Length: 463
Ligand code: PMP
Image 1 (cartoon, rainbow, N blue to C red):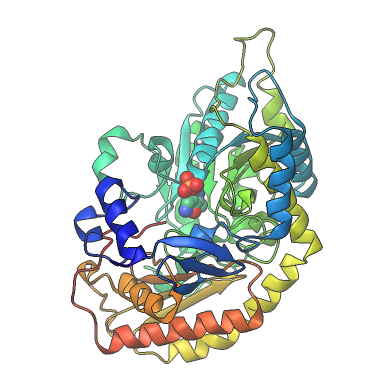
Image 2: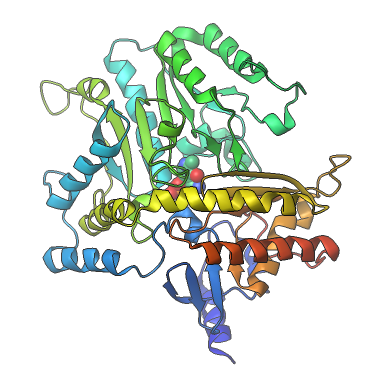
């Protein structure tokens, strides 16, 4: 038995993996990752893979970066953990200072957590409590978008669109007002919008007009709905949304867990859309691909609504045991410094232009229906027959088949349904990106030629 087989056997005996159907996991030759270096992952079997999804969109600076390793070691020699409830520490303070320095202007307070879903829940609870304490108790509804994804906890699921992944929990979720997402390539109105007169925006405005003073906030994944299939918003949409929010006094809540911190070629997606959120949510790349940390940033106006006379007056009673873990804060500070020192944004912009050059080649493939990209992210939507818009049936798990073919060719991809996702580390070089694009192209070609009819391993491939 090979080393890889031995560890796979041990895994199958005791583990329960996220988003995984274990009956199928039994038969899957999943790589057991041993180490990483730059954009590459190395498995126990001796195989080397280019990390095409930055280990679930987190590993901005690549694996085993000496500066990040050092930042953790220095902090480790001081203290690994100390609570943020009743105490404070330098890395927690320094990270918040840096986030406030670089974040969109109006944001001035940082509340830490450990993952995107928790940071979204915190935004939700803060927004709700804010209006309760401002004396506008009727503002208790949230507008969210179709196709949205904000995480897997019950509050974050309620904000997310109903899908095969969460529908079973529907009785546990609270109601939200659901607005149509601008999905221009599949507009149900079948019109191309001139002068930013989007039909979907008019529908959103109807909801706002109808519920007006009942609305606490709008949650949006600014610029791109990532987990929903890499759906890019039309130019000007975010700004129009912000204007609407200001007009009606609705809190504008930007979930930048996936798109924040350089992924789109600017530090924040809000910057790209010229908007100033009231609440901004960060996660994923904040921990530099090393340790779990997330943050919910708010304005001073929101923060001051929580100032009370005594402990139980207006306090935000929320916190997790490992909130602001010092090791995670230390690596996050080092990651933000690397963004600047190693000119990450310049690389993202150069690589984005490189992706652009590949688009016509992909579009020639029979099964490629849409190639959406912005900064260093791309979604390639596959379709059985793009002339008749016939979809691949979900059971065929075409995206997963491409990921499996890519693995054989030396790249790790993780699709979203029929959309092949590319989210490589922000450090990726020109030649490494060409390698990833070539593997992806050939894998889509392989799968389009002779589709693998064996059942794929993961029934669900969200995230
Ligand atoms: N919000 C967005 C926009 C996301 O893309 C994700 C994860 N894909 C989350 C929230 C949830 O983050 P986490 O998986 O860290 O809970």
